Length: 485
Image 1: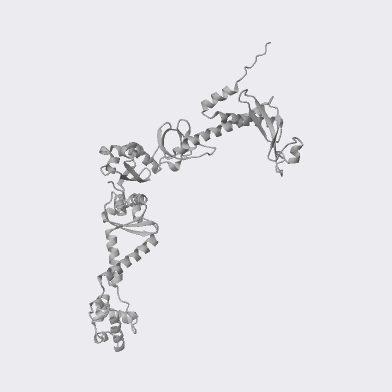
Image 2 (image 1 turned 60 degrees about the vertical axis):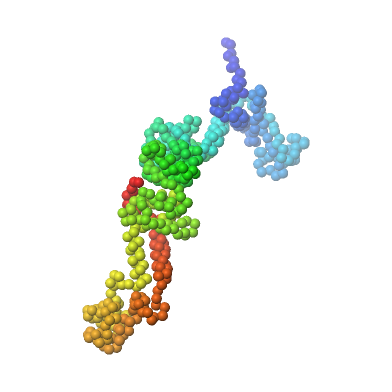
């Protein structure tokens, strides 16, 4: 029976064909194959020394060698020799030289071939992942399109054609739902070299996605006429974008909105109904803050600096308070991120109450009608204090206008106690009385001193409130409903 001969395989031609199909450099394939043959030869001959292999680029033949390195002090006895040991095998051996010994590559067995196959596959996977990393590394921040392939523990695996990408649960909008085979668009936020899982990480919540969508829809942004200064998002709910025009004749907000809102509406559809506020950027922080808090109308903004972060006190009308704060504090939080400042919002009625309280404390006016503590007077106990109040002497003005004779008519008040009461009432003279006395030295208070004192009171109140609250927006905004412009 005639023996069938296996046709000789031209390995160089096979390698070139596979390298073209996989789009991997031919040299990487050859290096991977050399490592595979070296691993197979080492397993076949049961040797512990390191082994390397070489491929003849013309004939396609492989040769394998075990080798040892000449060193001063041996740390690995299977891979190193001292200089004296090396010269027993090679007379002119020098330090640092590698001495090779040929190993036969004929008749490599099935187990050795399996080991070579595993090494080859590993090297090829590493080469493919390196190629993907080099292809997508410079594309971070770029928008790509893909198809939903499958779902893994809440993460979306996206088919990009040449490779797969992942949209982690943390990078998904909770208002969006996708099904297998559906088109998805996202921005690349990371490319890594980890051995498992997709290397490309996409996001649907990153503000860069919003910026890139505007660049694709608005020609003025693409050519640089209109610049997006900053953008912030509450994914799936609301976004704010600050834009600036480099040309005086171009309206940046109108360019982004488009005719009848056509440009911004296409972006809203892509983001599944996310509302977008387009704001004109301003170098004036007060003007920028008033625009950023839209759709609420702002009455007044004052700026103070506490360290590197500016602090804005914003006053709005009572009916505009919930609109300025937004649903769960969303509007004021986005505005704070947009302008890079801390924002405290107060209604006009709250400010009026603070002003009244500050004036009451500074002028020592008994606005609330609090009763005097008459037990502070020498010789007056609780029973006598009650008797004085019952006789109509419970207020300071009544005590100041009454004489000792009128006071002695109260049961339990003798002449000494009456004198003490009159003296105590005279000592409790209010600031108005002191200001009304033209002959009292230093009693007149100038308007400038009054405003300075009032300002100090407000600063003390603001500092105390900031320490107690420790937050940017009042807690009452958590249940407020957001409005539309």
